[in-house]
Image 1 (cartoon, rainbow, N blue to C red):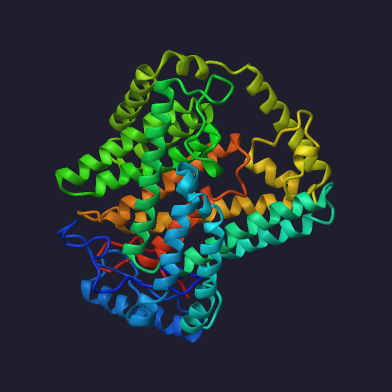
Image 2: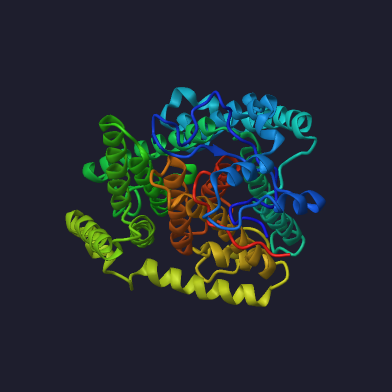
Amino acid sequence: MRNKFELLDYEPVTPSRSQRPFNSRDTENDSPPIHAIEPTSGANATAKSQKRPKSISNTRESNSDYSRSEQTPLGDHWALKRGHSLSYLGLFVFTFLVYFRPYELFPSLAWLSRSALIVAIVTLAIFIPTQLALENSITARPREVKLVLALLITGLLSIPLALDPPRAFQSFIEFFKVIVMFVVMVNVVRTEKRLRGLILLVLFVSCVLSLAAINDYVQGNLALEGRRIAGLIGGLFSNPNDLALHLVTMIPISLTLLLSSRGPLNKTIYVICSLLLVAGLVATFSRGGFLGFVCVIAFLGWKLARRNRVIFGAMALTMVLAAVALAPSAYRSRLATTNDDSAVARTDDLKRSILVGARHPLFGVGMDNYILYSNTNKATHNAYTQVAAEMGLAAFLIYVGFLATPFNRLRRIEQAIVMSRHRPRVYYLAIGLQGSLVAYMVVSFFASVAYQWYVYYLVAYAICLQRLAVVDANTELKTVPTSE
């Protein structure tokens, strides 16, 4: 039987030896090296399984044999590891434009309003021939890619049955763009440096958005009904609830980067980032965001304090209570309110979307068409019922599977390293990404964001992380007994 940590559904790619790995000596002096392994099948799998250690107590020599026997040729191929440099540059610029939208901040840059689309087209034009030349296939095929393509197909099938087909088709086109760039990201992020570059870019933008949210609240710029701030920029972050969703998914990443960093300067930077994200979250006055924050703190406490969970749990509870106590009184009042007009409308649309989904279980009512069935002419305000009502029950199951699958990948990284004396950065990042997915799954229960970028970036990070990082046999791997 395969080792738990072994990947089954795609070809892994390792970082270049010339680059510092996640667990470099500058970060963790005694951490085990990180390599990638290639899934085996058929006769090769039978032959190699004889070399595989049956327990943690096996000798280092047998573990080394196992590691060598499993290592993929792709890991030693310079072109494959360094491939897609131009595609990655395009992805990086595209991410900056999607998240930051500089043309909204500076009127003189209005000519860049369609720049994200142009960059995406150019990136795709470079990506396709490069990918075919490198791997002779259009994409790697991890389970998440298969699921998201299936979800895209269900969206296409929902168009003919939609009450407003042009509206459904336009939503499908926007969703198609998301999926295309998701596939590009899965394939071009081939080194630790690239993955960290994307994450740090988004973290930087998140801090800027948090500063803007705090400033708007302090200055009294309450653009949303005179009670709540609006986001600094449009698109993904114009709605404070959507901004809160994004900020709360970045908090666990920032906290785990803090735990894995070395040196007072780096730690200070990540402390400041974490505090800014929490303060920005409070400034949004989002009740769903607060629930997501509580779940994130509880999750990180459970994962990181394995031997002192009671003590750490008490500390986490103290942190949450302190955040609420230091928040403005209006924020506490909003958290205590569950029967205002907004809450009542959301409850009504939740019930209505469940009913619509039950009445149209096959292909739903068409993408972005639920609003035509709503009693209040509003969206579902729930990503799960959004998919179920607009694309059908099968799409709902696919969507849930897409959210759940990355947890298995990230847990394999975590479990392989958890008993190590010195834990490399990959360990903390794996936990941080799990926390981000938990936050998304909680907060998206109150937002219609199933077709938006938020979770697709997180899932792509998770795929890329395990595609890059597999612990060498020198780490105490948790294996299962082999069987004939």
